[in-house]
Length: 142
Ligand code: FES
Image (cartoon, rainbow, N blue to C red):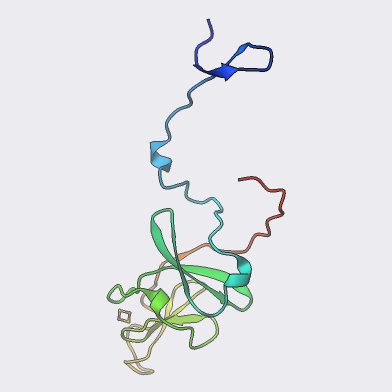
């Protein structure tokens, strides 16, 4: 006898069965290292955009024509980077104390309140998340 759950008859009256797959509890918030749509490409510019994805708060910006994502948390005191600005191409500056991160690799490249001799430059990293643009055709199914 076939195991499974009866979901209803087909057009000929036979019972359709489906098996219950394993529960993927670890995937409750999605699978890491997969692509997920986050924003429409046309909506992403040099103004930081906050997006919550897979339970993580991320900030997206476009720099040098590419989409980039960082965790939306400053490595200094945890202020949301999405409240900051992109004062120089390829960077995002925290609004709190002005620490500035490279959006490609998350390195701290400046601490505006400390000046050019800041000891934190190059020593801290705001974690970045892989981001990019995928062009979805209308025929793609999720
Ligand atoms: S919290 Fe971001 S620079 Fe201090």
